[in-house]
Image (cartoon, rainbow, N blue to C red; front, side, top):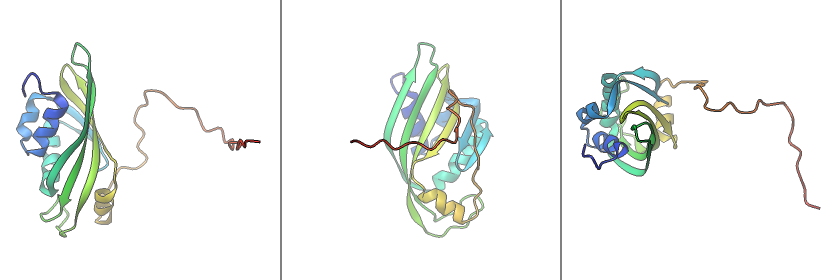
Length: 166
């Protein structure tokens, strides 16, 4: 990674090119990974193995958005949003190939400490791949409740009153 390449772009470029060894310079050894395909994975090697599986599906990965906000210590957050153009022509973990293809729009949220990614949270913005994997028996996390930054107002069971002009 050059001094001018943002960590978000380096993360994307390494992934889309399948050059996962480049992650050694930007990911913490004990990185925590959460995604619709699995939660609570830890460690750079586990994440590389997970990513390699998705690279078998990937025919192209387009970056569609990116943002990075770090303080002077290299602490902060960033994200990338990408389109995974996929085709299931090779075994994907335990799932046999079907030839089905589609796209998956995904946002990867990155928590960064001292210029190293310590947490990765993947969010699917489209459901094509998720539904495809679900239909083939892939288990997805349910009732996920991450620690909130701000706790929202409890549902008080009140029905909102419609306001009409008049």
